[in-house]
Image (cartoon, rainbow, N blue to C red; front, side):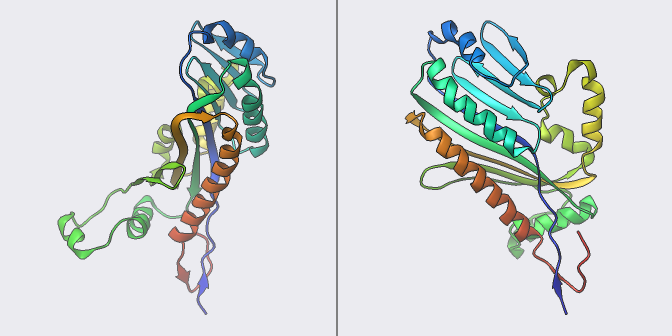
Length: 256
C-alpha cells in the first residue's frame, strides 16, 4: 500500500534581529555606556560610529549604531537567541534613550539536506513552486537548469520577504553569509570556518525568510511580542513549505 515519504528536517543556520530608530546626535554620547550594560559578550570592537559586541563561543554578536541595533547568530541554539535578544530589548532602548522605532525585522535561514542530485531537486521545486501552465511552458526553453522562488507578501500587520531555492555545496557559503569576523576567534578563524563550509550538505534547499514591520513611531514595547510571533510564524512557514514540497506518495518509505 502506498505510504508517505518521510520529509527531511529543516536545520536552522542563521538568525538576525534588527531594530531601526530615527538617528539622534545624542547617540554618540551614550552608545559606549549602552554597550557596557549588556552581558555575555566578552569580545568587542569600537569605532567612532558603532560598537560591535561579540561572543565567539556562542557565535553571536550585537552591533549598535546611531540609527539601528542588530543581533546576529550563526547557530541553531534557540536558548541563546531568546536570552540575548531579550536582554537587548530590555536594556538598550533606555540606554540609548529611544521610546519608538521605525522598523523591526526578524530573519532566519534554514537548509534542508536532500539525498538527490541537484538536477532532480530543481525538477521537484520547479514542479512545486512555479506555474505549470502549458502556455508558460511553451515560452520557456524545454530544460530548466535552476529555479528560485522569491515572494514579497504582507498580512494585516507585517511584511515578508521569502526566498526558496536549490543549492549546490559550492554555492552554500555565499548564501548563508556566515559572520566570520564577529563569530569566530581570530586565532583559529580560518581553520574553524573551513570546517563549517566543509560540513554544508552537498545538495540542499535554502529557506530564507524575513518578517518585518515598518512605520512611524512604533512603540518599542511591541518589539518583544513581534520577536515571539516572528519566530513561531517563520518556523511554521518553513515546516509547511517542507511538507508541501515533499508531499509525495511512494511505494516505499525510503528517505529523500
